[in-house]
Length: 55
Image 1 (tube, rainbow, N blue to C red):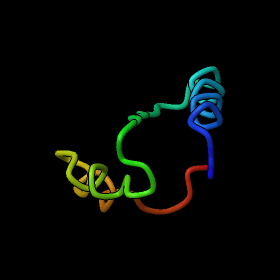
Image 2 (image 1 turned 90 degrees about the vertical axis):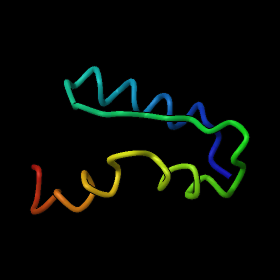
Image 3 (image 1 turned 45 degrees about the vertical axis):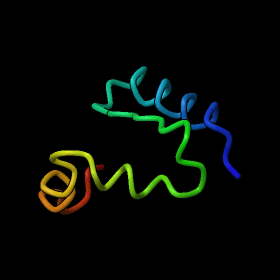
């Protein structure tokens, strides 16, 4: 299990490096967070618009 604080720390580090990141915590989702995630408006459009390396 990955504790939410580790994700929060990663997001904070990314923001500190000017990475455009969106983080949503679903506190009641437990291990089934993908249902709530994939129900987010615009997620699939954003996901499938990504391509190539962003180095």
